Length: 232
Image 1: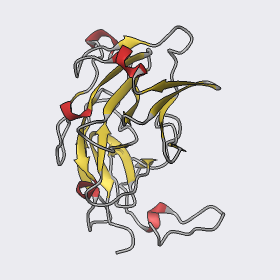
Image 2 (image 1 turned 180 degrees about the vertical axis):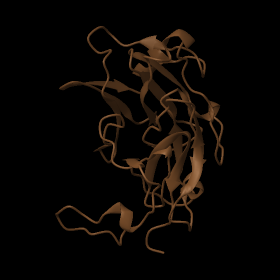
Image 3 (image 1 turned 135 degrees about the vertical axis):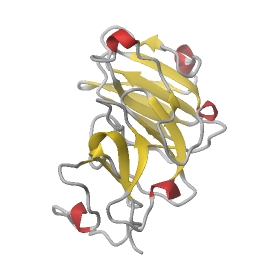
Image 4 (image 1 turned 60 degrees about the vertical axis):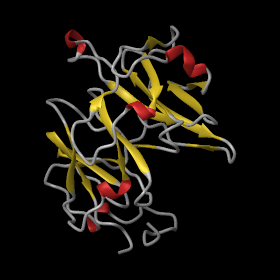
């Protein structure tokens, strides 16, 4: 990452570092060390925990990591602080929210993952997972809805706790159209970019990511991570 331009401007084209498939688009960016952990998930509500090292590759075309079913999209990765203590939160386009201990989600090298939140079969054509977030005990969840933001403490999430793969609870009326989630931690205080609001790097036919963290998307069968580690 330190080799990327630091001045203002348009920056360096990601295609100078990666070689995405024709028609692929970048959906999200992530950076980290080999032992850092991320949650990788799809808009159909499946995902898993993985080490950042599993995203990296010497191949500029990236590597297949997340298997997607028809119509699925890869969500921006969520950084993990402590697998044993953190909670994962998922929100759907219908305003359903589910929180549960992150330790209940398996750690995998690749694949489809396990069900995070239930979307009824009859609604799978219209309802999707908008965003996921990983909240540490000292953190707060920020729920973006239009120009407004709702802040939920770790304890506030108790109202949405449930079994992994269940339907979850509904957000209050007026907050059910969610644009994205972000996590605020303290100390130091920092706010992550809402994970469902800005997409800056994953691709779609077969999506791919990098050690600089670009996730590309271009198909419906696998999401690849464009993974040549930057700086090597």
